[in-house]
Length: 443
Image (spheres, rainbow, N blue to C red):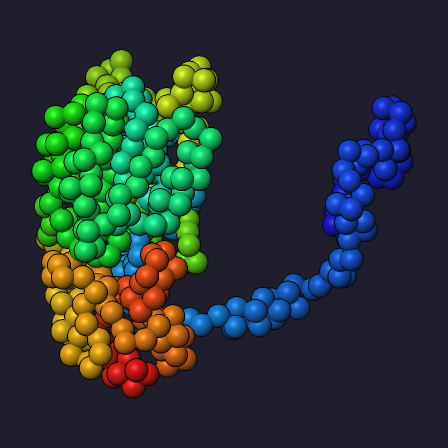
């Protein structure tokens, strides 16, 4: 039985003090909703529990060759990342309120913010958010605060998981959320420019987009600014090793999922969302920001410069209710970026692009397999059009030990035969060859 500190006598004394019975405490819950006494099995020994958990874990398919993407990627993680973040000093992720005892944590966050600014070519970054989707939502809300408007335009080439989150979070808010349909896989300029007006707070795009296609949104940034709106760009951080940065395109707010920066896929988390912006918008940014300062003796130190959270005196004026996040994930990203450095990140990005290009050539050489979109510029993901339903093919390939990709019919109407395949630096030419042979055999 579970351990309950209160004895039966103590429970009864408390009930007598308030003049109720135990059943009275649940009177507001409809009888049909009450589960009654729980049929819990008896406790097990540690040895038995370990054996049972090992049995359950053994049912997972852990040896699949991974070609999955869609926002989460199987990148190589240097062993030094785990060794460094596994130090006991880093275990707590709680907000470092007291700088006099939190200099290590504060400096790590400060360096993380600096790395994100360099990566995105922006001027300020916060101490990270929960994941890429919530970061994009927070960027949208930030644009509303900056412009004091209520209209947002988002193209459906943005990650559909993120779009579902945004629609969910804004369902009961007075926000005009307009979604444009992609034009052959890329953001529809004509549709966006037609909708862009003096009521628009921001335009949301993604690069590379959900289909892996590369774009340059400099023209959209210019058009948005002409109407007083902001350009919000969600990006894939690894791609920034070789692609034009959002900052160079004129983006005002940049977000993304930091999983590819040293975090394992890990059944969906924990991850981190990064956010960067221009200095003039920094006071509208959610979460907290660590800054550099000097103490009374002139020594360099670090403090929470901005912490516009609801827990503080701002209350209803807070920019967000984002609370203590997984700072350990942000530290992981910092360690990963520091280990790779500028050249290492560039080499990793180039390997992803080159291997994806090789896979594209091998797979499109198969009879009946062709590119779904006309655009040829992609980073490490591609959408292929199969001669039959993609979900069935993916299931057959899993039986052959290959997690081949995502069926896009789950997210986009009319794309039943479309499959999204991702190739990272971890995939070898041999593995790509095995995928091609297996796909050809299944088809």
